Length: 397
Image 1: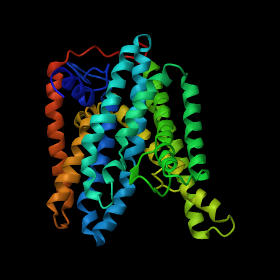
Image 2 (image 1 turned 135 degrees about the vertical axis):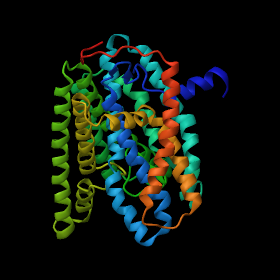
Image 3 (image 1 turned 180 degrees about the vertical axis):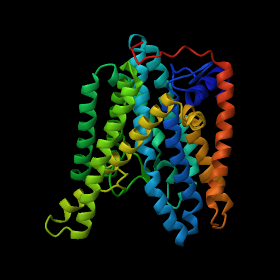
């Protein structure tokens, strides 16, 4: 690509969400800084997960066990990012309900960019795991699923109420699991269709996949949260609501995981192998492909509670430096996501470094490099863009 189409494509990928003003307005912090900081915090978990994959996994032994323990912490990344991405759409729609058509076109251009150029940029980095034939066409990164959500989400949000979207999200999530557990096609094209749309616990066609339907259900739930934020006159009330919903979801996740541990101890003699296997997956905190109820509730609830805490921190003036630091990553999260693949899956993996106990310093150094690139881009964008005033309340635009 060249000239204007190229600039539009790059802007669609790395700019803040269309319609957002820079969170730092002269003399006043924008109230979106906490949302951007929450998205940046989630990206830190993405960085840590891929750093552990690239550095610790090849070492094997004790390093691999350490990676597995870190994995339990970093699993917050996917549900957190999907919820906050949906929240941004709901927030933008609430603010621009009467002039949403131009925004919808911008979001769809971004979606198409992710599904084409974004896919081609990310897939080569999976050469780290390329021990299978045709590996390059057997990878479906999370950006593909996000792109499809961005493509479909604006149509759904402009036609369904928040309550209807919440119900639809639950139905899509539950229906996807019903098909994943109950439909076992033999033909390869149908197996591929199942893995892409609904997911399968053991993939047979793809090497990695973020199934569209269950994740789109989570995304729709995020749009409801964003509409709360965009239409509430008091952000502190929304922060409290996010914390309560996050705590409720997290509690449900803990209960499901507790049931999972009981099942693990007792075994499946009383339930039968098929039913036991299904319930075992649904209640597992590590059931990510496809995302299970316990996994989404536990880690999605943690992400939502974190967002509520950061919103309260912004309102009370605490953690100011962290909010500003993390917001830089959050404002350019898609650019950060693509860059980190090359830092970790290409750079760190190629170095083949030996294990040393101060490995967290190496991780911090990689984050510093990524942040410096994002800060430079953020400063460039801030200088080239005229900020539009942010509303002081959550009322509709």
